[in-house]
Amino acid sequence: MKQQIIIIGAGASGLAAGISAAREGASVTIMEHTARPGKKLLSTGNGKCNITNLQLPKDAYRGNQPDFVFPALHTVTVSQTMDFFRELGIVLTERNGYVYPNSGQASTVLEAMLFELEHLGVRIMTECPVKEIKKDLTVITDHGKHRGDRIILAAGSMAAPKTGSDGSGYSLASKLGHHIIEPLPALVQLRCKEKWYKQAAGVRTDALVTLKIDGKAAASDRGELQITDYGISGIPVFQISRYAARALNEGRKAEAQLDFLPELSPTDLEKLLLTRHRQFGYRPAEEFLHGVLNSKLAKILLKEAGIGRESWVKEITEKEIKNLVHCIKELKTIIVSTNTFDQAQVCSGGVDTREVDPVTMESKLIRGLYFSGEILDVDGICGGYNLQWAWSSGITAGSHAGRG
Image 1 (cartoon, rainbow, N blue to C red):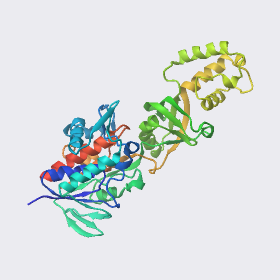
Image 2 (image 1 turned 90 degrees about the vertical axis):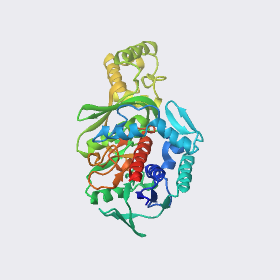
Image 3 (image 1 turned 180 degrees about the horizontal axis):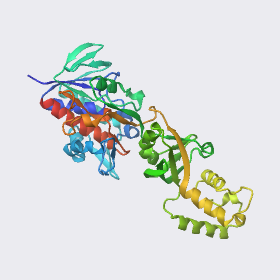
Image 4 (image 1 turned 90 degrees about the horizontal axis):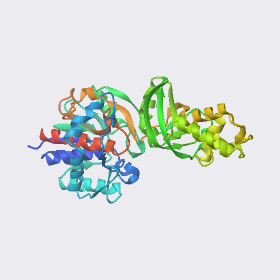
C-alpha cells in the first residue's frame, strides 16, 4: 500500500518535496492556505528566479547551527539541482555563478514543477489552512481531518507575508513540542538614527559596510549601497542585516561603519585629497570632492568633517582633511531597527535545528514528521542560496518520507 504523504505548504520547498516523495511511489497531498501555489517563488530573483549559485561560500548559511545545512546540500548538490530542473524542461543559464532559467521568468519554473506534480498524480489543495497537526499525524483543516503516514511541514517563514508567509507553521510545530527560535527579519533594509539620510536619499554607490555590535566588528560585505530617506539598503546591507536584527532584539548596540572608497587605503586617500587641495585651491570648498563621490553624498561627508560650504578649498586645513578621510572611510551610523517582515526576503530564526535530523529532515521529537525550507532556523545570503536550501531540504525530506 502506498505511503500517504501530506505536505503543508506549496512554496518552493513544499513543491520540491512533493515531486520527490511522489517519485518514491508515495501518494502525495499538498495543502496550501492561499489561493495559489508558489506565489513567493514568482517574486524570487526580481521575478527571474535565481535558482541556485555555482559558488558555495563557507558562510553562505546562518543560524544557531550553521553546519546543519551541509548533509542535505551534499545529498542534493547544486549540480543535481540543476539536473532536477533540466529534467523538468527548464533550460538554465549562468551569469557570474548565478543560475537562472533561460526564459528569465520565475513563472516558467513554477509551471514546470506544477506540470510534473500533475503528471505524478499529486493532489494540491488550495485555500486549505491547517489548524492543527496531531501527534498521530492527523491534520485538522477547514475541510476536515486527513491522516498521513508521513507529514512534511514546509509552511515557510514570516517574511514577505503578502506572498502567503504568515508564520502559521511555527505555531503548528510549537504545539508538537518543537522549540521556535524567535523569527526576525533578514535580508532586509536597516533604519538609522541620523538626520542626514533624507538629504542623501537615492544615492547608490560602491561601499564596504561593516556591522559593529557593541563596538566590535560582527559582519561585513561590499557592494552597491543604497541610501534611503530612513537609512541603508542594497545587497551588502541585506547580507549583514540578520546579525543587526538579532543584536537589536537582544538590546545590544548596533552600528554600521560605511567605507565609501574601499579600494583606497586611508593613507592613499589622504594623499589624493592633499593633491586635490593643491590643484583646486581656487574652487569652493563644497566642490572639493567633485568627481570623486556622488555630489549629494559629498556634501554630507564635507559637513560631517566640519568643512564649511562658504569657504574655499585652499582654506581647508590639514586637520579637516584628516577628518574627511575618516568620514569617507569610517562613517558610523546608528542602526535603530530593521524594516518589517513585509520588506524582508527571509527570516532569521525558526524551528530549532537541534530537534531535526540533518540527514533526513525528520523530527527527533515526532516520528514521521519532517521539515523543509524556510520554517527551519536556516537563512542564506543573497544569490540563490535560500532557494538552494529550499530544493535540497525539500527533495531530501520528500525522498525519505516517500520511502517510508
